[in-house]
Image (cartoon, rainbow, N blue to C red; front, top):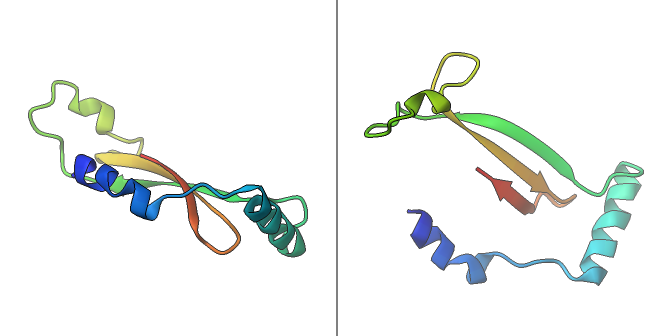
Length: 84
């Protein structure tokens, strides 16, 4: 699945140029002075990983298996960064 998603990156992922960054900063500043982006992290519940010797590393502090996902968005709620 990861390989399939990665193969589509050029169709869906682009980096903003300097003018777009300036526009995002100005728009954020109008709503939230001094802010140029928002970041949020959450745990996505997953089934216990099978055939993995270290399944315990997927156990979160609340006692269930999860992946921690971080996303950064711009003021228009467009995703700028994802870390899973």
